[in-house]
Length: 95
Figure 1 (cartoon, one colour):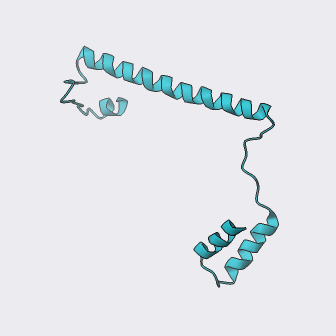
Figure 2 (cartoon, helix red, strand yellow):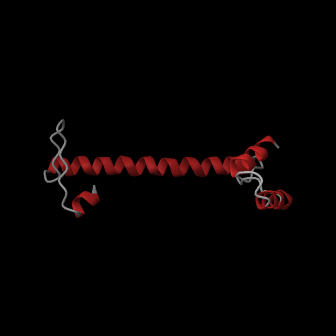
Figure 3 (spheres, one colour):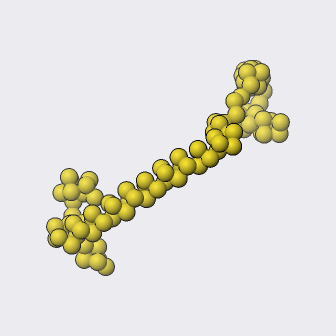
């Protein structure tokens, strides 16, 4: 909504008769922004709680690392130019 205002873009809704200039429209915009911020805050809070809970159970929240030998194997296989990347990916999925 701020972007619309900054660019002097008029937003109209055929159903609600929404016009950014009227006091009702400004109130509606403020309420929408408040709900949007509230939803965003809930997501952040939920994520923090989930991470804290996972840490309490001994989880670190990271992806497992790739072993250097697997990286070297993939590079060598790629350098041979015998297999396409999709074929190599299929090989890694089978392992």
